[in-house]
Length: 244
Length: 56
Image 1: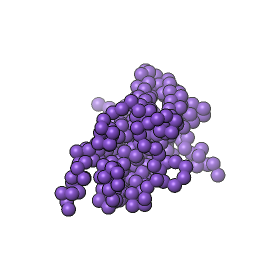
Image 2 (image 1 turned 120 degrees about the vertical axis):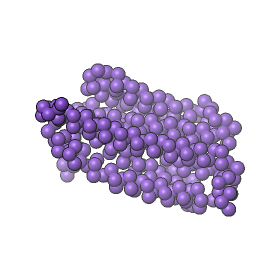
Image 3 (image 1 turned 90 degrees about the vertical axis):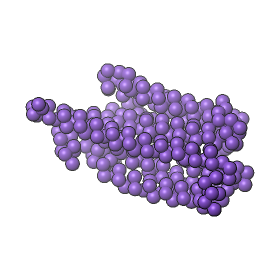
């Protein structure tokens, strides 16, 4: 039953699976995002308070959710690599860091553009915004630490440790709007209970969320292939892999 | 009809840059990942060629 799980520790297996999955994930992402964009920009009605400005939700919320999801994947892969000394874990963590950082930046910039017409300011030292900015800094710290060592194995271990410790910021980002007084609105879809949106607005958002998840999967597959190749350059299986 | 769509109810200066920035981030992710993989393949091919002793 757990054979598939043990196989994930094998670099050639992971390389092959990533190569096979990538085009499917990218195709799925393109379809989901195309529906989400068309329905979100042209079909969903304007919000009764925010008007058409609310449409920024279709990139801001998936970007923000992915910035946290990718961090969880990076931290879990780092923990696996540290505990069981599985090298593929370091490869997944290294591949996830720049993707997660880009989603955190996307959440901050798109949120800033949404904040200007709604709050009257591009930036406020609000708990949600500040904790998301700290998340971006942790991503940058993880990437910098990995490349700061001459010995790649030591860089991997140091970055993995920081990634695991930094996971404490994930619930802070998510619950900041509950724990403190915040300008930022509460959770819309990732919460206990039914989403607080009508279906005509919700379905495009769910579709964009799915599209972003699949896109992350596609980019992760490509980056994991590169990380595995860089780490296994001297292995015999690499000769066959790079010919294909 | 179309001008209403592009004006986004007066919020066009925020909505379109928002979607534009998101598009740039997604495109960068795809481009950077493919570039990284191409570089890794090239380095692996060179390492294998060096190991085989057929590098000029």
